[in-house]
Length: 320
Image 1 (cartoon, rainbow, N blue to C red):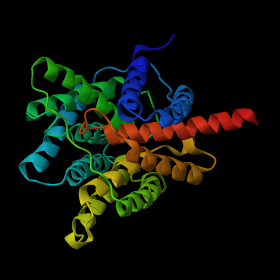
Image 2 (image 1 turned 180 degrees about the vertical axis):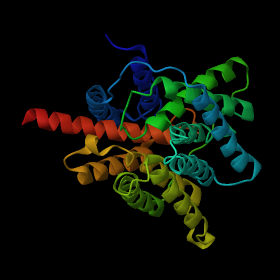
Image 3 (image 1 turned 90 degrees about the vertical axis):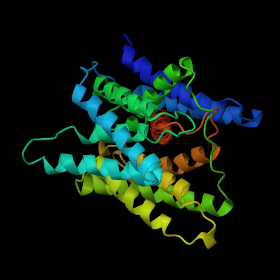
Image 4 (image 1 turned 135 degrees about the horizontal axis):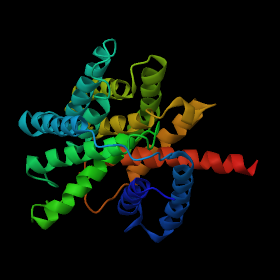
């Protein structure tokens, strides 16, 4: 029997996929999206791995809500870039967990903090009042605790969970007449698209190496390089006419691909990570939702990339 929380996660991924890629797409691309959707479905069915629903962990709910508030304070209050703020909050959660590891304290802190930070990335043009975003962070933390045994080792889980939390709160905001009109997406130039490809190929490799080979854990493995990249890109001279924020976001989103566990990628992780990073970049170029600026959309894009490549591997192996 299909578990209700399995259907929930499948449903949110389907909503994201339809809204971001299928609806409004040119007819010529519909077949491409349909074929890719089949790969995602195969990968999801084979690798999602839904165990029993966990209990609600209220500390995780509180941590996720506080993380969303922290990102809001840095972006809307201190005018920090959204990637810089998210990476900083995530790194703080990862460092807290790492520091308490020897004393068996603060275990399980990093994931809800990072998940809540993604909810905090929601644009002011989508949810204007900070209370809505904090509520979305709390909801994301609640869902994360219930889904503790689902999507184990799948990159993009935290972001997709945050996306679910934000979309859930958006429903309440619509009912209250508090929804915004939505943000606009950055139109990448030809030069920026080339850089996005490079960043999307490099980021998963760096994240995976730091997370698993060096043992930093997936949150620090993603957040620390993203923090550094956001700082370095912010130093680019304006004369280059590059957009530091969107480029940093592409590195951050591709890093979620690199959070995929080694056992999911065995026995040849390198080509799979490169394929997932490449697909993430291509999907990002084609991403055209009805309502942009929703926190967690980078993670959901990464999850689609991971499941699609894993699904393709399943089909190739089954044909042999």
